[in-house]
Length: 90
Image 1 (cartoon, one colour):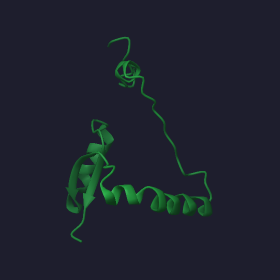
Image 2 (spheres, one colour):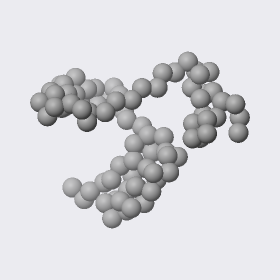
Image 3 (cartoon, one colour):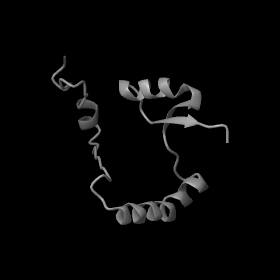
Image 4 (cartoon, helix red, strand yellow):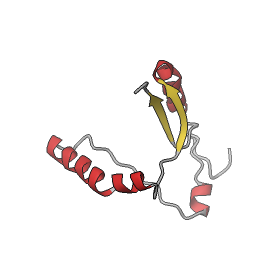
């Protein structure tokens, strides 16, 4: 293992060399009202950018709903970069 690779497999050197910032968040401790306000703000502030194509999410893979098990296995493997989508027939 290289000095920049942690025991959990995280490779820090590429992040450090690009001077990137890694952040995380969880809504679990928020109240239902706070979660609702965050959802409304997201719809108001971010959705227009998505609809205009100004920003695009990074999508690693798409799976049909019948492939949910495979999608979950991919998520658990942590080898993906981007979103894993389950696509319905709608």
